[in-house]
Length: 165
Ligand code: FES
Ligand code: FES
Image 1 (cartoon, rainbow, N blue to C red):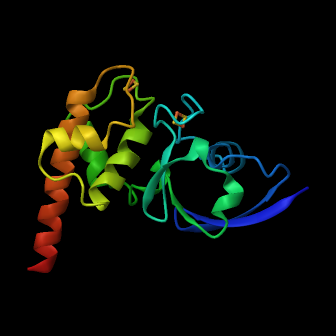
Image 2 (tube, protein in one colour):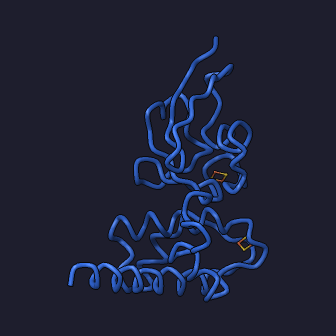
């Protein structure tokens, strides 16, 4: 049984024929759309390496059937930068050395973007750690990750205050 679905991925509409309706969004992104920035860590919802935003909410794409996302808007790590300019969360991860091997980083960054958009990051490190607790880092870069999220939250707040003034 084959199935056709249409998704908007990083602002581009993509129609994909699925031969197997059980394919996950993660495999669709990596294997059909060549968007390999989203990583497969555990493939069972435990590490957060596969985090992407769907309709603005963070999800584990390894636990999500692609077929269930027909018509959705998906944002992956490849869609964050604008031209040569990093997204503020990407810039903050670089500034705070918030990675070592980098394998978890796309998921961490997408989760941080989602957390900030949800208005849940605030300026409390404990709250940020809690909000990011679904994203594991084998290298233990947690300190830099928390600092980066707090910093990105501050710069995004300042930017929106400037826009409003
Ligand atoms: S690969 Fe999806 S949570 Fe680990
Ligand atoms: S930077 Fe290596 S797993 Fe997080």
